[in-house]
Length: 109
Length: 191
Image (cartoon, rainbow over all chains, first blue to last red):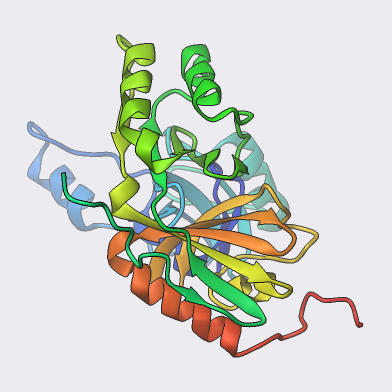
């Protein structure tokens, strides 16, 4: 069972308290973007076996969206952080580097 | 105006752990900047309660303040004073960005009272209710069985549960079933 700490409530929320909202750090491609970029934004997703960044919502709690960094292979959670950011905070990246040296995900490493 | 009746009209199921609907309770939902001095002052003046920290509820009798989220507060007042309380908040906070709404009739409050009330709740919610991590004054929004609910501990033998009015009967029956199924003994020291 996946347990994530909501960065807004500070509580350890069980998976059933949360709602998965897919991949984190998507860059929206709106009007004026090329068809190719728009298609990538709509459909193309990371599907890693290992380090992954996801968006979650504390649906039964505060209702806020947050981001989680975790391993899809071992279910290890590296940390959760505010969704008001364009990339994972350095301390989360450091924790991942400690556990998975040489990791990369999209443009992050 | 028609006579107001709470969701379960004070229904009670007595037992080793008693489940009891609280009857009419005044509740305000208040969204805004919880660090705002004016907001904090009007809330504490309305309820006489200390302003709650993250994940806390400060309640005494019909009155209290519960921390719902970083920008949301549940204000408990006597039922008859709820409409006036909204007006008081609106006057105090006019000009700032906030939302205050009287939700008294949209919710139900249920008390769970008795020696193993902690276990009655623990069987239904995905929350660590061990005495080391959940204490009187702690407040949690989560689910009970299949519905959204919030609860806090008033004292060692009493939980207060808040749920939507439409699911009050389900929540009540669920709590009664959990109480009836008896003690598990997961938290208790051997006696």
